[in-house]
Image 1: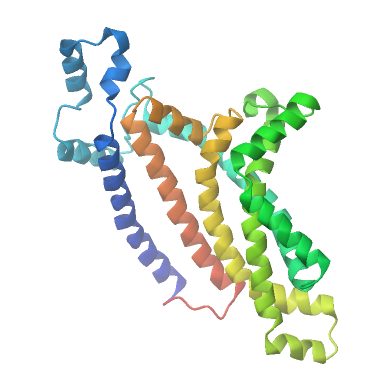
Image 2 (image 1 turned 135 degrees about the horizontal axis):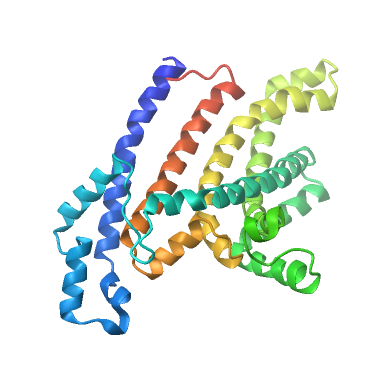
Length: 311
């Protein structure tokens, strides 16, 4: 099977996955406790006003009819209107995507810069005090919650040292606004990626062809760079891809802590106000990003290892 045929087949398999996500999200949201009409009217709530508003928003129709209406809007790029701001959901999502992408991309850069070299060093120095120290460091990193590290970074670098802003977006503080959030989010994911790198490199180092290359008199650096790292890259890329999807989820907490105007804060506000169209649109966007990342990782396999064939 060629790359083009594989790509077409994967794109078609994404459709039922995304439809399943929309059905699940729609049902869970509408069956969860809480009434958006009560939240919108507040102290002005009366049965008559609630009935009128419910009819205007289409919430008095059966759930299947509401779902089909929402699904039909997707095909023309209409994700509905926000309950609170009356802004189109698609416009609200598009305006916040750059912030979340910068945060997720920056966090992955931080995670990669920390995890790959340290994971490689830990494997090469297996059994030494360096390996033990790095494994303890990875364990600490995995055990450290993102929100706790974020608060610590704010106290140290924003409150005490006054070197970086504690919150705000690109418009207020420029790129400085992303340094602490990217470090907080990236550090938490670096630990798992470092352990995966160490494990993958150890598996390759024990292979016969590596020992043969060393027996031929090739330098240690050449063997590690040309044979070990290249063959250990596929499992590392797989975990990194899955981590990128998890980073999008972790961005919710990080954006709230650092007051970044991204998808995470949009999702958080939508949950508090039971804003169904915004919740459905945002979760669908995250699901689409997740399956797209997995598709790109699958395509990357053939680039990293030409022996990989799609089938």
